[in-house]
Image (cartoon, rainbow, N blue to C red; front, side, top):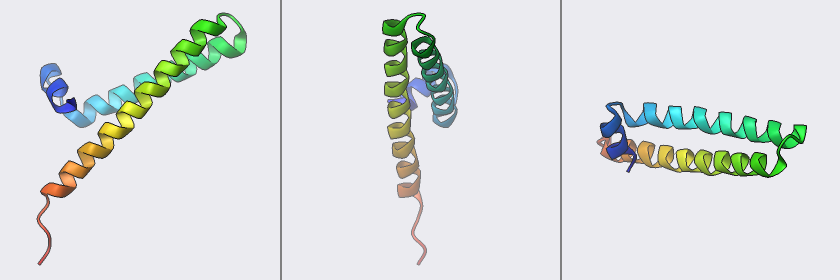
Length: 77
């Protein structure tokens, strides 16, 4: 899935995952700031949860990408 999305955006899957990780970090920080300042607790909670979900999505896909690279390597004999 990440590979197809990366081709659509014209980038590598690793770069796409790094950008996703940056976006998730921003969502986490914005959500945390909204909750702690009391400006909008409900919206902050939703933004924070979106950041958590995106962070988990990126982590799982990064592990899948690295496992695929590892599987393609030839064993040393």
